[in-house]
Amino acid sequence: MIYFYNDIVDTVYFLLKETAYMKTTRYIVLTAMMLFSLNACLNQEASEEIAITNVTVIDAKNGLRERQTVVFEKDRIISVAATTNNSLDVNKIIDGTGKFLIPGLWDMHVHLTYDDAFTEDMPSLFLSYGITSVRDTGGLINKLRPVIEKMRTPDALAPRVFFSGPLLDGKFVVYDGGLVPEIGTQNATVEMANEKIEILKNEGVDFIKIYEMVTPEVFSALTDAATKFKLPVAAHIPLSMTASMAGPKVDSMEHLRNVELDCAINSATLHEERLSRLNSHIEGAGLTLRSSLHQLQRLPAIKNYDEQRCNQTLDNLKATIQVPTLRLNSFSMWPSYEREDWNEVLMQVPMGAQAKWIAATEDWFEKQKDQDWYGSDFARWSIKLVGDMHKRGVPIGAGTDTPIGMALPGYSLHTELELLVEAGLKPIDALYSATIRPTEFFSLEETMGTIDSNKVADMVLLDANPLIDISNTRRINLVISKGVVINPEELL
Image (cartoon, rainbow, N blue to C red; front, side, top):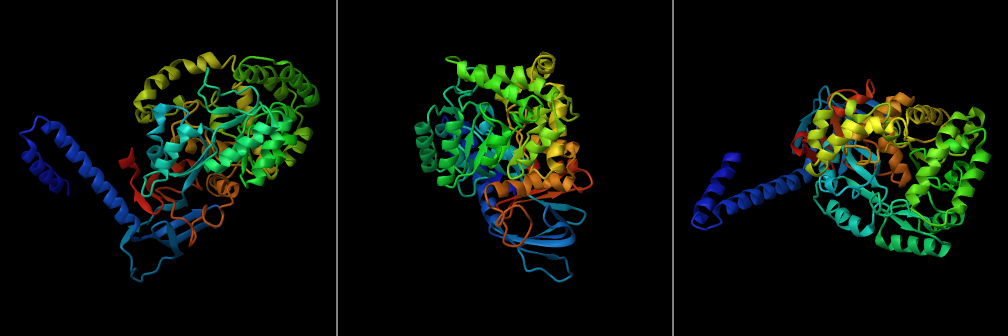
């Protein structure tokens, strides 16, 4: 096939060789033809009836099913049944002997527009690692809009994307574009909050994201308005509230943020001190205020951990999905650059960010380990807390905060699954967190999350069993996204 294309390109090139632009033209022709060919192949493959035969199917609802044949066409699974010797009337057969088929994975916490160096490459990176759906948890609409539209274009090679729009912050905005990217927006009053939710609904957001600097009154206005417009709510627990107060009113909580205060024996004293500082803050950056409160109170709260009080807190959160982003919280104990494959990871980092990551690899840990609140005490507490949450029936979702904290899109989700197992989840539970749990957040359980007939055709074919070792989710053979079969190596 390549020779055929070269013959055509050379013919066109010969006809154009007398022009001053013949070299450029040859590249343009070649590129255009290859893109046209790729698009044609994707369109053709997506319209075929395809069968994966003799494969072991694994999902968090049905468990493990051996010697199955899964037939799908376009973006729909047609059937899942025991493999027989009968001939199949399909367009293509993929031999799944010795392989394992799981649902497409989700990353429940990403920021597509946080770092411009990553935005263009994110869709292909996600897919190459088997992430077929993502939940963008914060970005300005004007920057997100073209990215979302491109990812949702028919035949786009991209994960399904669900977005919240900006972080809905209070009078003082943490992510205000000063020392950190601008992905937050002000909601200083109840009126502003109500207006903002209506605007976001009209912009087509899939959910909203409440941030840390809002007051209890604004928090209530935001959640009430979201309920009115039937929008799920993700949130950092506001600094002015406790997890027990705010958690039951939202659909997901991120990073375990502020749970430590509610688990401390002196919680009331710490919260009173926090409110005093918040109320006395007249001017200054929201980032500075938030960081100072975390640095002042996080470790003392953890050191004053009270198991009975914390169990009561966790019992209040049994209807709220926790997205702990353990790979971020425990970075000081398991820094990504100490992994054996880190040099391979760096090769996949876009050039605009690669030098920054290499520099960070050299000095980040030494500078942060003694002073930052992402210390080893917080890391160990995060791992323990997730284990306790799971034991008490608190729902866990898998998210990474990519690309923040040296998180390569896609790759970092597998690290998160490994850490969830480290915290005490079984591999099947970790799969649940990255397949079914996100669908529960969006009430999409009927169409996504398992490998069953009439579900969407998002699947990952693995070379090894993830129930034996969750790290086997990294051993990807093929990715099926919206019914299109993708070789991950070609994407990378």
